[in-house]
Image (cartoon, rainbow, N blue to C red):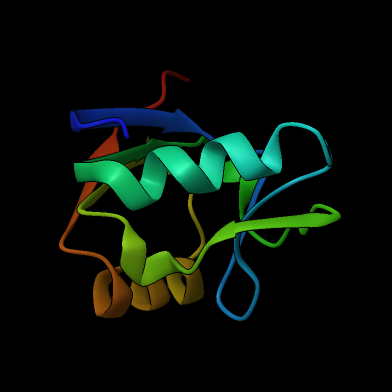
Length: 95
């Protein structure tokens, strides 16, 4: 068994219904196992990941303690993430 205090997880896609996903079938079970063992899951995903749905599920949005993204995330995504996730951190993007 593994024990992970903080997991920083990059994802291919995040979606209100599908949650966090990846197109990589071999990677998905490892990601799920890490999410299951982590005390805190911090997802790092830029705004282009919203609405993308990969072939394999990793976890629902509510599995994340925090999502860090850029401030170009659409308003509907902000609402969905705010409702599901413990904390949402938006990083300003340059012009």
